[in-house]
Image 1: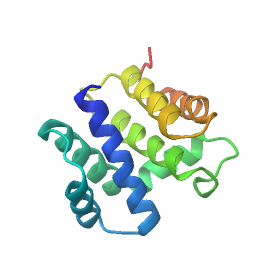
Image 2: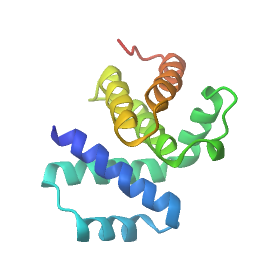
Image 3: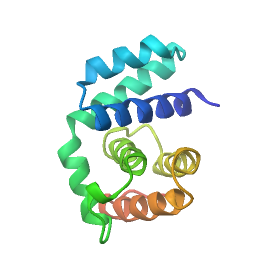
Length: 138
């Protein structure tokens, strides 16, 4: 597994923890690092994703709700919701990551951690968002 994949999976776990417990970012990250120790590069990427998602959460949630036809954020599973948040953050703020990579990673993580339908659900929403942002997902 690549460094960024480990970072994304760690970020998903931290974001899930924040979502469930309402802990602050620093407290959630400290608790996570007390129990898991990825390499430094994965840890740095994880922290970038977590802090970026939290900082831009209102904007990210707005994009997701706009393009998740007939789905409110509260109706989505916490796993799918946080995978989407990470991916939208990457699409909007991580210009060094090709959109296709972001989408593929989000779909694969959704298949691993989410439900049977998570991959297709995540892919559909991210495809609509990439069209809105004017970035090519190919």
